Image (cartoon, rainbow, N blue to C red):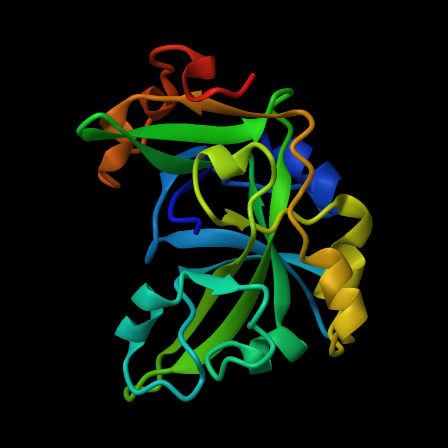
Length: 230
């Protein structure tokens, strides 16, 4: 699964990666958690890309209450096309979720050790996501999103049996296009990202609490090779 992630790079780097107009008022995020506001990139009706802010935890359009979103922070790539909670968004409202790393916890002795998984050159990337629009009984509109997951790559299998789908830049337009995806196209895009150039760094347990949102969440502890990977 993917339950926490980071987005700390400069706004100009993100604007270049996603081919957007200059981004303003973008603050670094060191411990992004479910139910918080997050940034996504999606297609507008004219085909241009836009940067938007939504809630993490998808609320289906048919939901009776918003709290269902707390259970829908991730969607399995293998079943997303059929699940009632996700299939409409999968057909028509796919998005990219910008990030530069994500956290995973591994049991070490009697405790769980958080790791920050990222590219060794610290470049930003994008998770494959879906977004949805929901209206509550008071006619307040809420936009929300979920992050797709897939089986682990060679690095992640040391940590967890799932990992978020990382979308290569060459596939950005294919993924956020507004039409349905054919099964073969989807299968080609929703694969584990190759482990080459990725690293998993043990970090402080400060990240365990979503109340902590500061650079210290990324402070390394111990040795990177403690779980048997380089």
